[in-house]
Length: 74
Image 1 (spheres, rainbow, N blue to C red):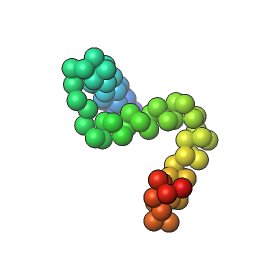
Image 2: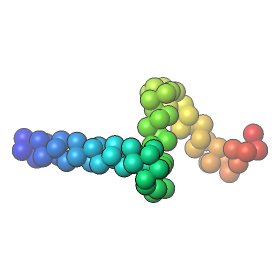
Image 3: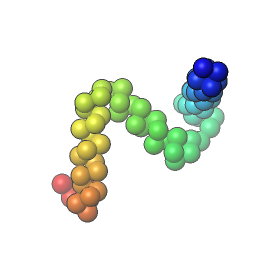
Image 4: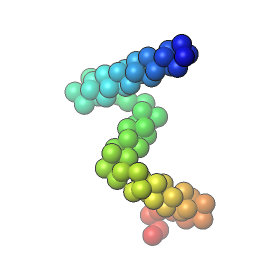
């Protein structure tokens, strides 16, 4: 039980730090790393498309990658 509680505290701290970095980026005070931009984009997609739309988007995205097709060629 202690480990679960500790992990939850760590997760909340990570989310707080991410939120602070995004706020600083929005104010033009900070550059985000590539992974932070990727994570932010995924979060926005999930928030806008909800679960089914998000999963459908990812399936389409990886389907094109698996077929060695460029998304631009569609």
